[in-house]
Length: 440
Ligand code: GLN
Image 1: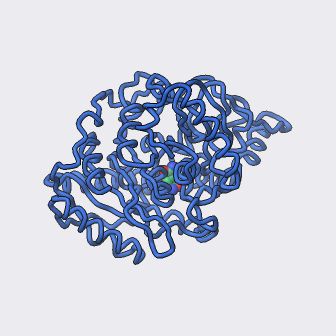
Image 2: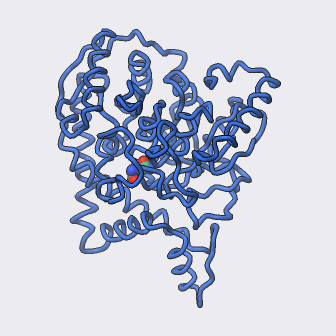
Image 3: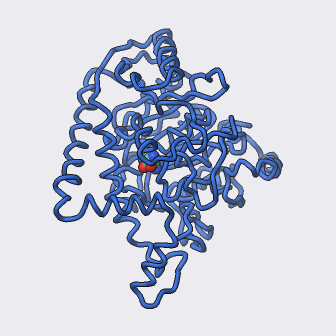
């Protein structure tokens, strides 16, 4: 598959030929179920788009039954920025329903397969985007990351996935999961393409009140020869599989060989991250999902009266995982439990942020695993608790609002890709990409 950098050099004719071939290739690989549907929206370089990002006049469903039939009335800001740069949305990619999950098994459209092993998950929730790029069915894709949903499927599918600093990329037109954690980001074949796509989609937007309104670019200053101070966290890998432990050691050596200084650091136990995340994310999700009542968007199941219509629509429209989170979110926000759960989670979030700030006082990057194992087999994470626990390496980055990038570093003996993550200071995407380039 050609890279995004190469695609930017194609003539109009070459691009049209490429798109025809790409459409045929996607059709021939339908079993993967990476795309929900494919449609060419204009002249630009085709980019796959997760099914929770609005493209005007196109269906957008967050892979949920409740949004069947809903047509986006406007473009997400990232889509407008892409179009301005000569890119165009090309296919909607599969995902966990409302981005809640780590496997893409909870989609209304059925599961997506991992391109490296059809009995394994592609990761989630941006599993369709990761599988499309990993299988050579997309030059690049957009995903969204609330607690790891770009970085983890990227690691499972052997591609690069990057979550920007909170506020760098406008969330206008992104189907909200947890608004204080969500960010859209690039999923690409290599680090340089991720930097190119990041530059295109990031920047000012008046339509998102949490937008950082910063327009600096990374591509003009990319420098893989910069010497950085990189923290490794030996405690991190204690709970990881042998594959991940090996990759972590190997990457540490590679960073040393590239001339970086390696510093050992400690961070607080990830079990607090998981609690703080699942309380915060479900509380926000409960609020965000209240709007799907059958009146304003998508599917409606007519009931005996208005309230019954709400109940029937939501009971039949949402899947099990989404319902579980709505219940959990309502519980932690309810009076009597609010102080004990929600407020405590916010305090914990603050401590996590301070922990990172302390580590970043004298270092540039942190090297971390992305997930405790390579891509699990279907059904392995059937217990929701096991699935939540597998997020331990990615969610604190969202809680602290930091940028993180997952890149493939090796394959295990079964040929499954292993990705590792670099984490940088808030708004220091430049260092993140520079460091990642030196490790690629
Ligand atoms: N797996 C995490 C969750 O289910 C993260 C999902 C995401 O980043 N959208 O909440």
